[in-house]
Each structure stands twice: as structure tokens, then as C-alpha cells.
Length: 124
Length: 124
DNA sequence: TATACCTGTTACCTTTTGGTAAGTAAAATA
DNA sequence: TATTTTACTTACCAAAAGGTAACAGGTATA
Image (cartoon, rainbow over all chains, first blue to last red; front, side, top):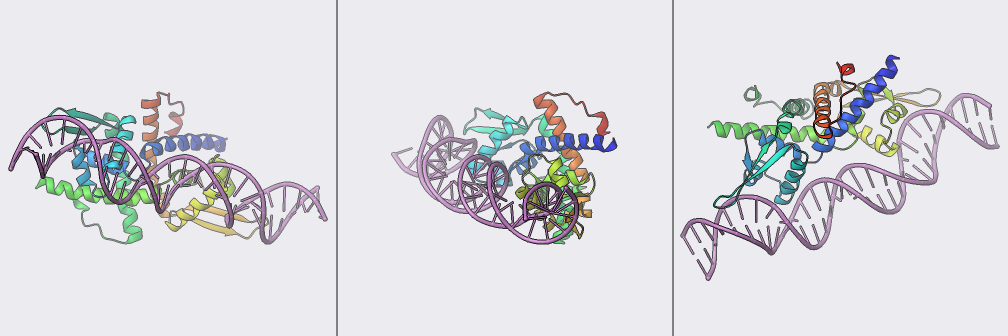
């Protein structure tokens, strides 16, 4: 009986994880979201944060994130054109998930790669 | 100055997220890990949890997770051969990350798909 | 001997993801 | 007039990820 209940919970969790993964999946979406947690940014700003992303991939992934309602795009009709990207409330709601991802990424690096954590203090 | 510090933290976080993503990436690894949080399991058990995974993919991803030290494989020399997979301490250390991933997945589904959360109570 | 169980493997193919390089459009500046 | 800036787009290609179907090898059971 507990087993059956466990199975149901497991199935539910598997479903939820797949929903989340579908949005997160790929090499660039999480980095883009992280970049935007440091404030609204323009296309070129994100490119500077994520040094090795090509304009093609950035444009493509920004569109996907917009469709998923994670970010929003605002066009300013200024001198040279200006576009600002920002996190939506749904994007902001990923904060804890991102924090845990980062924490674990650092933990993993320390365990496996064995490197020291020099910036640890700054991350409070 | 705060900006420069922010940039450094941002770069550090981007690095950590990429470390984590490299391990998590793909359609099947997170589901496999979730399945194993419900106890040690055999090849066939995991296949039953994750209905649409093929033996090829399961075998391939189990190997990858073993190499990343997330899971371990134990062979029992019994009647029909028996192999048991379990989470290592490093795998167990993903629990909070998984919890947040699941929480967000449910949140996302409620926001976007608009479905009701019937199993919510059972997930404490 | 034949069949079933368990844990995979192999070959082959399709789809998705990502990379490179070049180009575009509209306005402002030299 | 030519160049710069911003924000992309397009065409083309390579690599990675994933799917399908069949098979394998060892043990136990009918």
C-alpha cells in the first residue's frame, strides 16, 4: 500500500521533472536566465556575459524563453534601436531552483575536480 | 566597483551552472536519479518507473551517471543475474536541487498548463 | 529440448542541437 | 558618402542525442 502510494508519487514527480526539463533543456537557457537575474539586459549585454554564445543561438533561445513566459522582451524606439530583456514573475520564481543548481554545481566541482572555492564568501 | 564584483560573481555562477548542467543534461538522467531516490533498484525496476525509456538509453545513461559518481552499480551473482543501482553520497546530495526542480515544474505546469494539483498534499 | 527471465548490446536511422560565416536594416555619426 | 552601432537573420553544415528493432548470453524452469 505504501508502495503503491510511493509509485504514484514517483510518477507524479517524474512528470513534474519532465515539465521543468523541457523548459530548461539545452546549453544556453540556464546561463541566459542567470545573466538576467543580474538585472534587465540588452542583447549585447547578454552576449558579453556569455562569451561563447553566437547571436544565432542567443536569438533563438531568447525566443524560446519568451514563448515559455520566462522572460519578456521590450523594444525601445530609441536612436540606435534598443531591446531590453527581463525576467517575468515566472522567471523570477526559478530563483531557488537556480540557487540549488549553482550550489550543487560548486559542490560537484569540489568533489570531482577538487578545486578550491575562492569566491565562496561573496556568494553569501 | 559593485558592478565589477557582480560581474565576477555572475561569471562564477555561469561556470557552476555549466558544471551542473553537463551532468544533468539530457532527457533521462534526472528521471533516473528520481527513480533511485525511492530506493535501490534493478535495471528492470527503473524501466518500469520510466515507461518510455528504451534499454539502450537506460544502459547508456546509467553508465554516464556511474562515471560521474552519481550512482553506483552492484552485481549480485544470483540465479538469474541481478544488478542493483543506488545513489552515491554525491547523488544523494542532489536532493534539494531535485526538490526545487520538482516544485518549479509543478508551479510551471499550474501557471502555464493551468492544471490543478491533486497530489499536492501527499508531497508534504 | 525449448522457453522464459534478466541485463544488457548492436546496427542503423532520424531528429535535434549547436556552430560558422556572412548578410540585413535602419538610423546616427564622421 | 562611408562607417558605426544595434539587433538580429539566413544558409549551410557537423555533431550529438535519441529512437527502433533485433539479438546475445547465461541460468533456471517446464
